[in-house]
Length: 329
Image (cartoon, rainbow, N blue to C red; front, side):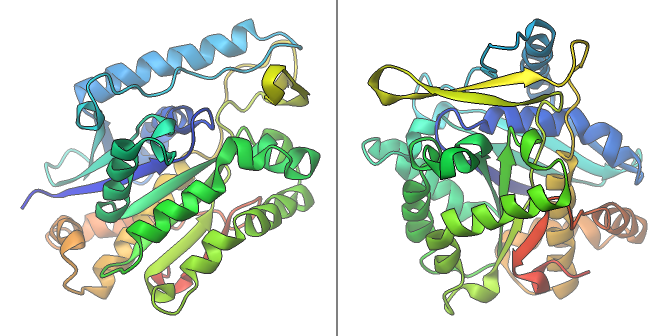
């Protein structure tokens, strides 16, 4: 059996799913090598994300005080859902061949809308077959003006409907990471970061209540993990344009500030912490067979992953909202 595990992004158009994935890629190599781990993208993944990364860096060089940070162009599916690429990374210990393949899936944000039947079915399928889900959140829309634009931008109602369909019955554990992006303004100190967590709990309350129902509460771990996907910009203002659409503006923290994402590696740390716990529990969940194959032959590998996973943050907006038992190693 292939040692392959799937992770999917989840979020509406424009919230920053692809930008988040690019930011994760930018910090993968440096952070994983610290624990004697190697996380290597395949050729196509590296080429695509390097192109996106160049776009993000260019934005910070050309940024003007009154200009909107547009991010990178979203994922397209020119030939339908099955034409979408996977972002493939091979995780191993040093130069050994032993590896676990991680497949990150992205898709056009319009797929979560109820009027795109084929797209929604595709996303529901991903939610069922993926061990982990990363929910990208447009943080200014969540936080500014008492969350006035949260429903419009983040579509929490559609997110709930998708989870209700895909997670109605669960045979295996899942990890759900709520990942606020464009969050630099809201994690400047502990008080601000705690306010961010509280807003997530309040404005995603129906989703969290669904996760907490007895039939599935012990099978879902829920984490908040804010990622500063650019690092050098903060929120400036929001204006309402034609058709009552919000436009968010940002500014650089200084004239010469450069692209400097922060904490994107935390998503990988929490993911590996979850996978290591699934291995330690050693139950016969088919989805986690690749994880058992990955760890069993190599005690040093297990130790390296454990060391890396211990770097999970628990402050500054990072919190385990549910399923601590599924993350305790």
